[in-house]
Image (cartoon, rainbow, N blue to C red; front, side):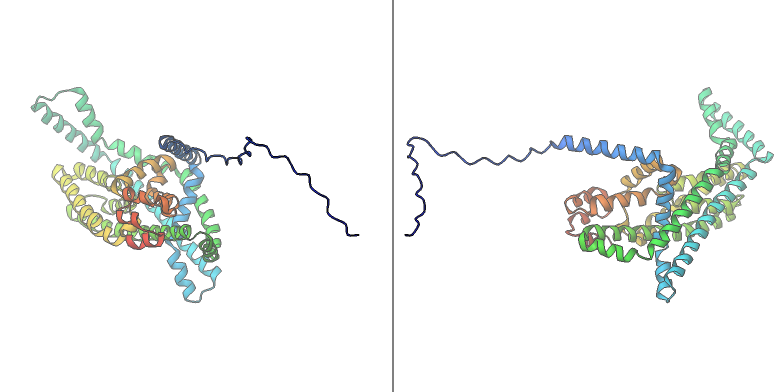
Length: 388
């Protein structure tokens, strides 16, 4: 006999009782208010900058080495294109970077020593006393006899202040040697990594193309910034030396070196390079000569650095003048004196990682970038192409 399946008991129907409703899915968490997000972002940014400030003796040399390696990358590619073995090309490029770095600080020390020796002479001190007496007499003729005003005038024209500042540069040899040593070590390891940098970047591009394009655009922009700034710094320094020799200002070559070195500091570098030669011209040749120095420096700076240089630098490596000045103040505090040199590259790195690599945040370029149209770009590559 066939075995029949067991019969199921039929549950009695319950009238008036509804079947239980399915469990509701949990609601998505309510997003935080925008004000809270902004405040948290500001607090986090300040905490990161404070941490970098505490580690500036290590962070500054590392970032300086990274900038130098990026600036020298075309030399390494050129050597590789000439069929030079990769390790030899890396060693040659690293040697060129070391030579430039040592030459930079040697020129800085030489110019500071020459200025200290010149301003320490008795002739300048006597001339300073004469100018101070004439200035006080001139002010008294207009009824200005306040002691505070005369004290400010004395401190403003006292060459001992300049000697003290320059002496501080010479006395800080230990810090400079430490910076050079750390930078040289980091450059050595970075040059080893450059031989496989292309393959690593291609792997990043496969997974995160926006991040890869942002890093490439940052490297190109920083490289262009350093090369163009160096070339135009040499041009301005040469013109300054010619003008100072024509005006009869002592130490024209030292002032030219100072002008070249301070050209790397955005916005205020021009003023730093102008004050010492103007004071020396005042003490050596009088007020008219000092005024001519100020006029010549101002004209050369405006024509070369404000009109011509931006055309070669390009908007893709630039931010607005306000952001440039804020960057100078912030990074000089975070990284110390080296931060003044690295202010713009540091800002461009943050911009590339936090803004250019994120399509949702690219609208911020409308306020940061020198070319606001990059805020409309749909991709990082398009953003860089629009900037150039």
